[in-house]
Amino acid sequence: MTASLIVAIGPQNAYLLKYGLSRANFVFAIAAIYVVIDVALITLGAIGVGTIIAQYPALKLIFACIAVLFFLGFGIASIRKGLKAGKIEKVKVPGAAAYSTAILLSIANPGVLFDTIVIIGGLAGQYEHLIDRIAFSAGAAAASFLWFFALASIAYFCGGWFTDRAWKAVDIIIGVLMLVLAATIVHDAWRLAEQIGLFGTTSV
Image 1 (cartoon, rainbow, N blue to C red):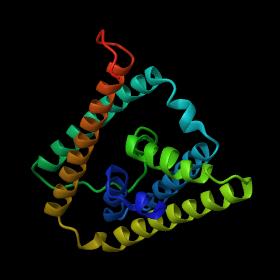
Image 2 (image 1 turned 120 degrees about the vertical axis):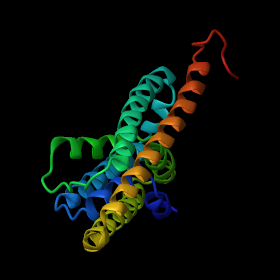
Image 3 (image 1 turned 180 degrees about the vertical axis):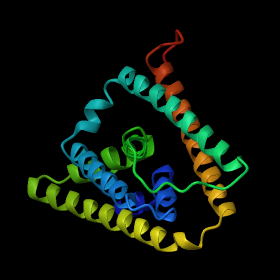
Image 4 (image 1 turned 60 degrees about the horizontal axis):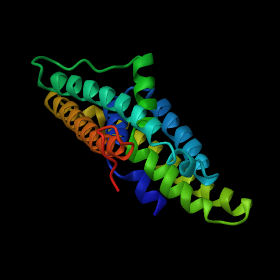
């Protein structure tokens, strides 16, 4: 179950594919970022942080609003890049933007947060003994490591056969995924706003 949650296709994996297919060497650094953040989030879930965060909907709402702005901007920029005429410039040298985006796709992605902290971390937290929690979390971390580095390696190997048209399609797909994620967060943020009575009524 933990492996199926990690390998689910989403903005995280799409972003990793993008740099793997461009044959950028730093794609493996991005994979490492994903793994480290997954391990940290799973650990937080295992010690019960998810339950504590759930008690402060206002904090979650602020975080959600920031995430919406980021994913909207990134999604629109990616779609515009895919629709732009001319050749695609493949990034070879890593920049701060590449790494910061990878981090945000993990910590500002409600799907990732829910899967790691709430579901996987929650499953680990059900074990009474610490050694059992560690063993379960280690298994989930191993699945994360294997998936992200395998995906990065396969994408890097296949990158040489990608045409400019295929590249543009990848950018558009990533952009659409970002906009879908933004819309999902907006929906969740609206429910949070109702929950804390921001509109004058509190949902039951």
